[in-house]
Image (tube, rainbow, N blue to C red; front, side):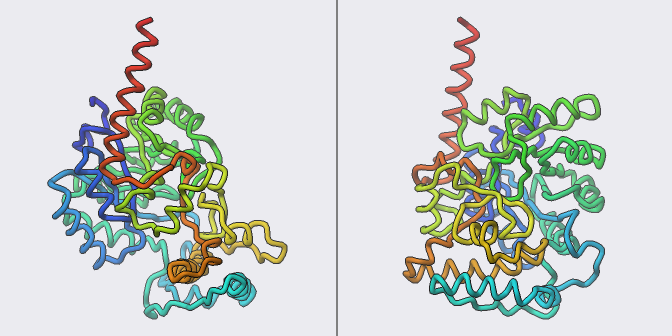
Length: 377
């Protein structure tokens, strides 16, 4: 294809796949798409191990890395913030609410021990350290979400000749990113899983393209609820240079999700993917569960704490939920959840990542043939 994204990334089909699972990343790239590894949960040591594995299994195909450096976070401007120091800021009310909620479902909340000096989640310096390690590998893209990438990140990309992508959920966000010098915009509608805004993909993509067209030529990747090649074709008909996908890869045999969550995805409708602050402190779309209902609608809910404090609460809670459900606690299944977009309503089975890429290609081709036939008539 002649998409500028294909030329920038050295790929044949402009389908980008965000995943926390190295197996998905490698499988997508091998199949002709472009896998992007979510690196936020890693340390410099573990990201080195993951990227070395990808290098050995990607057959020389290109791939990228995604980090998360929020602009707006409750600890902004503070130095030397650790998990331990943040844990001390969580009120007894919030801890009791969490512990009592899990207890109703026969789940014991066990706190994870972390090193005294372990940096806080979403730490900007840690993210930059991860990128330093990543550049020792043949990555072809770095991406950031939740704000304009730090100047250092953009400079790192330019120094290594690697494009920098940034996720945006509103037109004004896109204008700021273009002014900052990013190379690719990932325009993500509210249908998306994880952190997202409240404007639909169908509206947001053309709105952003129109807003930036007279400023600078920045390719746009459409994101949010895209689960098929036909949707991909529709987005490119609106002017996108390709698509950024995430939720569709959760229902693959290679993904990091649990078998229980996959079963819940297949059973879910698009309305079961709700925006909630209950997991991270920022609006993030995830599969509706007892957890989201309790935090968002519960009469006794203390309300979600700001990021990153809410992430610390949910970290131990969801570890306990998943362990209990896997051990056979049927009641724990009601709390099992994960980030997923409204496209979950289109998931009806679990497939290999390579098969999903092939289906995207076939669906895309059929959509183009359909439109061409309409024009021919």
